[in-house]
Amino acid sequence: MLSNLEGVNADAEEGAAVTLPRTRNASGHPDRPYDEVDLSSRGFWSATMAERDANFAALRADRPVTWHRPFEEQLLDDPEDYGFWAIVRHADLVEVTKRHEDFLSGPGILMESLPPELVEAAQSIIGMDPPRHTKMRRLVASAFTPKQMRRINDRIRANARMVVDHLAAVGADSGGEADFVAECAALLPMHNINDIMGVPDGERQKAAHEAAVGTGWNDPELVGHGREQVLGRLFQALHYMHGLITDLADHRRRNPGDDLITALVQAEIDGERLTDDEISAFFALLTIAGNDTTRQSTSHALKALTDHPDQRAWLMSDFANRIDGAVEEFVRWATPIMTFRRTAARDLELHGQHITAGDKVVMFYSSANRDERVFTDPWRFDLSRDPNPHIGFGGGGIHHCLGNQLARTQLRALFDELLHRLPDIEAGDQRLVPGNFLHAVKSMPCRFTPEH
Image (cartoon, rainbow, N blue to C red; front, top):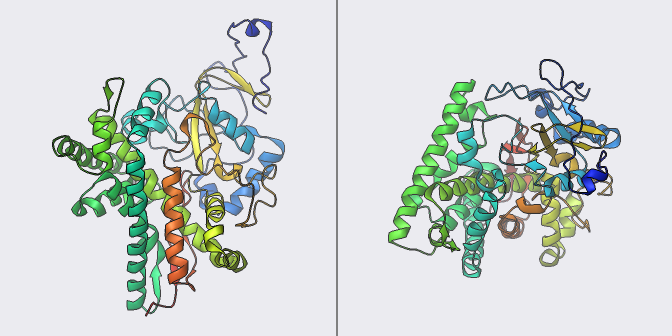
């Protein structure tokens, strides 16, 4: 376990700082070999999740903390990026997550190095450390009042009906076939998040598209080719979202409404309020994370229900009492966010490996959610799995996902409508987007008998 740090001596027990040996060569580079397992190539991330797990399983078994070369396709030249440490076991990932003093989020949460302006504009509270994180989280959380949550839940159920109405209509016009991602999975979070925030109808599709750009740097069809074009498109997307929310925040200060923007501009704790930049960054985070994670979980869940009809039958035989547990397995199985990065705040030692202050430390959720030490038969899609301590919403600690209940409610509402109204719906083959961050489904055909 990571808590078993070596090198702690009597001085440390008295409060003195412990300095572990630095492993740098004459040029300043870490003097350590890269592991033979390749976690850094685009080729690795172009494989399926099951194919990648053969490598993760080998690391989980013998080498739980390993050093790897930098990701091969960087958006920013970083002379200080010599590689990263891979954390692949469930227990270790949970501990790294909870030790926010030792493993920092502020320098960025992606494997790749990004311009600081992008980190600041897009990551909000998940890219902050205390005390700034503490202030921001308290202010944001104060906006999610019981009244606000009741309104959100009502809108989610209404939007689930509307989205399945749309899918059924598309299927009726095309012989019972549709692209499930475009016509269903992407629409529900788009409407829900824009309803929650109070984004007007005329901006919703644009806002959703720009949010997709925010996580689509690996998709040339979305952001183009080449580093300069990709970075330019990312800045353009964030500029649009910040402008949209700044205008909405200004409007809501003068004309309060029944939406989250109003709650955010009115939120106040100990005389402090959120700035326009802070509200805009939170909107970017909620829009990007909320759209993509729910879309991926929904798409992977329908594919799994298609491939495992016995599990589907089990769920439908007592849907109301089984859907809550099923949603947890949907999220574990999909693991929509596959990696998060931290940066070592000090020299320390994990599993016998010397980690130097400033080193990147990458947590592999897609490996931890298949850890044999935690999950019996982890590659079995089991809707009755109990307990199911997956980390699809994070490993706990100060960065545990603020929107986890929003995601769960969306999945429950959508599959209630979908499986009861289109009971024979089946998913076809997925078209995945290669990448090390999102387990992204670009498109997935579905077939069903249209409603009459």
